[in-house]
Length: 425
Image 1 (cartoon, rainbow, N blue to C red):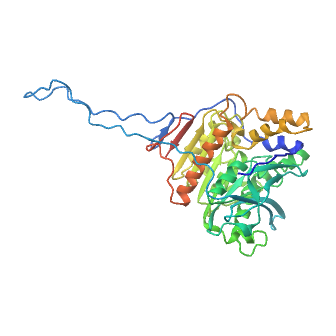
Image 2: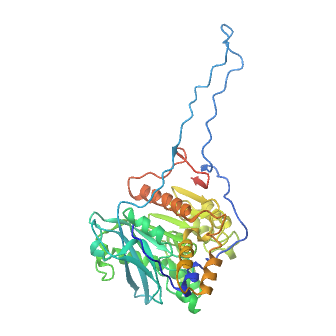
Image 3: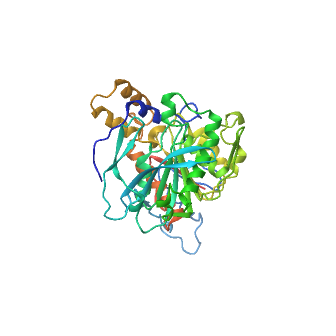
């Protein structure tokens, strides 16, 4: 692991944490599993014993009742998934959609060839200030590990966020042998938020799934000068999309297709798996829906949806509940982190830890970070280290089960810890 001082801009940090466009009231807990689902929360109960005859045979009544022959099966402990076998490199590139005349700044995380060295990567803001990665180095695509091609994972940030807002998550996935790419959704980033120049909401919504499609196109195009160094190491047959908050909406929209008054984007059939995190989907009222019932029902892609039980910005009910009930993903997994909140799935708590140690920090910035940190980094919230551990463990297990020879966590085999609710159908 690489250690170093983390720096971050005063103006933009608070903007990284802007809530998604869908909100709700109050804390919510997951609903009971429906028919065909398996639920595990605080472990698995012992199976019932066999019934005992009330009238033993008349010939020889035993002195004692024989014990049940049913044997309780001991469940294995859940093993946390930490950093993988690869060191991680990060490269920042630009991918341009010439049809929309839309440049996208993109970070690419990738497995490094053994022996590659370099400086800690700086997640740099528009002002030039930066947050230093504790584990990844800046690297060129020529240093990618030679044992690919690797599956491609696209990460979509939340509304008003930036591409590297979940670097703990994206770096960890890359360390397990994945190429992870994350675009800044131009017009819906922290930059536009602080300048007061965000795009119209309808334009943002229609652009987002197109951004993901364009990034996938470029990462697979051998004639692209922007991604040429990565194409040979990217497997076109193994692609997943994941995203947080409005990025969770984007994740679903890529799998379902999306349309509004500005046009229509078809579902991307190349996507083999999705991981929406604290997704913004909308409620039961059609006027409140970001994705319609019909769009959600069209999704059959294998899915893992992750959320926090105390999320105030995109609460489980209705967002996760609607998606869980309506989508036809197979397999379909639902992970709820008990007492986690909306920002439990970003790097905000890391920023909050670092800011007080920096010299000459703007008090207004500290106040903003502390205010936004109330939803994820407060006493009583799931500790951020635990939230990261569980998110990474279930996400990587899911990806490995889809793309590698791994097996997804099975509550019939694995003892599920008390601080998660886990559903399978």
